Amino acid sequence: MFAHPTIKNPFRGVLTATLAFLCANLSAHGPATPPAEDEARRIVFPDTAGYQTLVVDLHTHTAFSDGHVWPKIRVGEALRDGLDAMAVTEHLEYQPHRADIPNPDRNRAFEDTVEAAANADLLVIPGSEITRDLPAGHMNAIFINDANKLLNVENPPADPGNVGGYYVAASRWPAQEAVDAANAQGAFVFWNHPFWGRNNIDGIARINDFQKANMRADKVHGIEVVNGQTYSEEAHRIALKYDLTLIGVSDIHELIDWDYNVADGGHRPVTLAFAAERSMEGLKAALFAKRTVIWFRNLLIGRKPEIDALLSASLVVKRATYNANARMITMVLKNHSDAEFELRNTSDYTFTDYADRIRVPAHGEFELRIKAVRAGKPLKLSFAVENALIGPKQTAVVTFATTPAAG
Figure 1 (cartoon, rainbow, N blue to C red):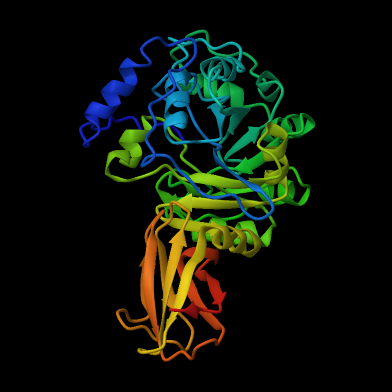
Figure 2 (figure 1 turned 90 degrees about the vertical axis):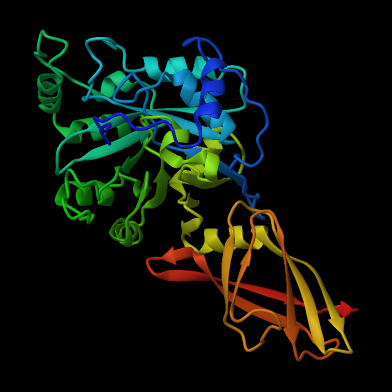
């Protein structure tokens, strides 16, 4: 989205950490300084049975369009958050800093980001944001070869400060030609924030003929179901109806720490991509194959196969023992993920210390005592996972099957 014109208050409990981070990255160019390990901040989810889980942010901005930091800062933030990959997606047509950063080569932001990540284990994805009014709206094209070929500006205003005039001139080139140019480069294209209030005053995502035609022609491959602070149930429905990849992004313009209150346990929204290998090719294949889950405010959003695989890897029975004297089982659940799982018992079993709802802490354990179970009898316990969606208003289900050992 276009950056908000007001300056946000930086005093949100993050001033000390932010100043330390900025001091380590004062020089705008060159490699970013690898951050000190901060396991509490890093976004961590386990690999699934068949794939590596890559943590990615596919929509970011810097001073090369309407963001307010240099690419080096974006790389430093990505490293601190434990990202496997980030995409550089500057607006092509909207250049509010044009008077200060002329930016004649739209590949420059990506090149500077690659330079900043030279000493880091971070995949930097080349991309651009095709920026138009409706019906095209905004679309990200990632894995492109040359951003300049997605832009064609005839008779731009002579005054570099005439931002609106430049946007109008750039918008005269049909949006469809930009989408076609991206696809000619083998890009993965997704529809950005279709629920954005500037285009939809009620915040409801609606499909239009332009997007519908490109989805059916396999020229738009994904849709942002989550952008920044917003989850859109309507965008989620569009994704499932048109068989699009589910995408969640930060769309960051300011500092991650400011917008997502990281010091108090917040996190940027990300896409978890399930890839055969940790590489640009592996990530691209995962996105085209729709193997994604969105991580947003302790909520997981994905299709059933990907959610089920992630839950199986994240939540496991550490041990289960039978107490013959009390005729009950003590079960310990282990959580290998950043999610604090909110579980609702859907089986016929009851518990001694809890009703039908329990919470399994992130990267922690939870002990549960289950009543009236016979020795040697297999136990099958099912829960609705209330913070894992496989569709709008549809929660996932996890089942633990075990035969308890004698206590």
